[in-house]
Length: 170
Image (cartoon, rainbow, N blue to C red; front, side, top):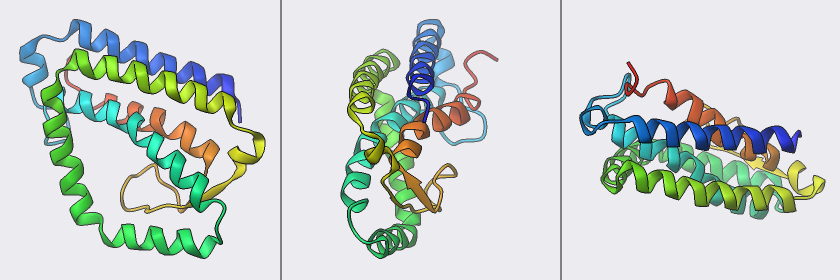
C-alpha cells in the first residue's frame, strides 16, 4: 500500500470540499444533486459521512480480522439481509446531517482526516493486511472481502463517486 498516495488523496478531497463549500451559494446547496434524492447540501454531508464511517470500519476490521473468516462472513450476510433499512437510515441520516451546514461539515472533515492520518501512520503492515467480509449490497465500493488497507482507500472512492453528483458548479 502506498501510504503517501492515500494521505495525499485525502488532502485533495479535503481541499476540494473546502473549495466547494466556500464557493457554494445557499440556492446551490438547496438545489437537487444529480442522480440522488439529496440536495447538494445533504450530499456534502454524505461526502463527509463517507469519511466518518471509515473510523467505525477500522474498528470492525481490527476486531473481525482476528476472528475466523466464517464469523465476518456471517456478519456480512446479516448486514446484507438488513440492506433495505440501512438504505433508509443512510438516506435520512444525510438529510438530517445536511442541516449542520456545509461549513460545519467541512470542519468535521478536517478533524476526521487528521484522525485518519494518525491512524494510517500507526498501522503496521500486519494491520494493513488484516481483513474481513463486507456487506456488498450496502455500498458499490464494498468488496466481498476487504483489508484494512482497502478500508483506508475506501473514503476517496466514495467521495469521488458522490462528488460527481453535486450540481454546485454546473
